[in-house]
Image: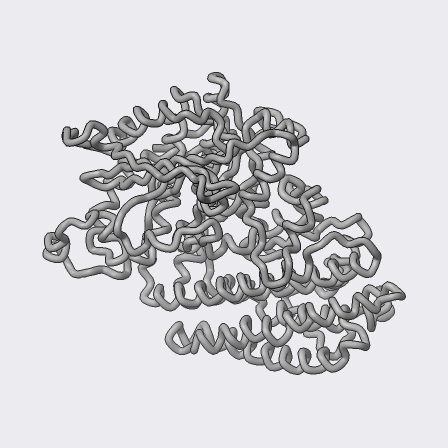
Length: 626
């Protein structure tokens, strides 16, 4: 179930421990009594984070052309990074309080883990930066925000003191989240971004900070609202690390380094968090993620007010078309079929397991070949050939359906396994008339990377873009390829009693047997989408598989990682996009690790994605630290 290739030293021993102890591809539900409250708290934090990122993107999009606009971007970025630290500190605090075994190893000291949270310090950092960044025009806002932040710091200080003794039940978590995170965003961060944007229009003197001289004679730490570092911290901590605003100044002096909004687990103080710091990490490019940003039209990044942003997959295809490479305006998708309650509301902007980029193309008139399959007995497979609707919709070709399981009318052929199901799909797959679809998408509930090798090895299809699900918890260079059939064979009995998955597992059959076998277990619903990703290949496993397939002229290059999806482009497309081809061996492994950092580990949304990091435990996060 596991394979490791060329991982020397510490990495090889880590793989051995994973194999013998607690493998990454293992669903381990939390055993703490407050897991439901923890999940609810994480959901609330994720909602606040998404709201915050929407505001941040709205204010920071667009290419700066004058000094004042550059200054505004750096100010917004400094404010955003402060708030990201607050969210991560509260996330860690809630996890330690409600379910410590999900956050620390058994041998680690819980009291010491609480001492590292520093939520009050993070709130104080935001307050300090507001004093530095907001000028005289925002004096009223600065006064109101400082008043609320003093109240929030006092509340957070009492919360941290009472948490170890009061226990999880002694804290009103809704109130705590509102006071320390939600209202900080609504009363401080959002208005602060607006004030900074308005001030930048009148920043004729190009003032970067106000109220400090940026030297030791008048440091920002002399402010009356500044909370001194803890007694255990070095006395010259502020001079050693620099004031928070100094990081923004260093970015300004080094031609834009650090503008990529990122936050690793544990914040800037943790070893894995420092992997995301542009000034510290040897893997993060100083000029940001050029694979997904450089040279892209402003209309994609700054859509008209009130309109939705252009979906990323559409941006990529338009960029390919702009290189004078014709699109076929077709796609191939393998989607789940079933009546499960989770299998609803798929969209190209959906979250987690509800994401399907091929739907972006279908609504834009692309034709496609959609395989809808169910990987549970008695197994289902259907091919829908969607006609193109480009231009005049009245000339669109109608969709046609084809039963993959019974291709010859009433003749019955029993399907005995997932592999047998894909064998039947392969028979139809090879007859696809379009040799170069624009996109191939594989949903994590249908199979893992092994299906790509199985289907494309003997078929003439070579899509321009591959969107492949991965297990993002396993970083390069760890190579993991679970056996998809065995994974669901182990999990299938448990989901028969799950309200969310029962219709998908039983496929509309009489579920009286499931009811008789045990009471409905809604607790399992919390882990359903998590199980999809744990059955997927690691990023390195997909890389190695495509390297093997390159011998058969199926050549692809990793373009970027987007959450739990790896996006590859065909080699000829990659060259047309004007990128330098990455090497193989150690250089390729380093490039994959850097891409994984940008797309997963350093992405703020990853802390809450399908509860993957929460259920995996703290040991998995340490794999990322070389």
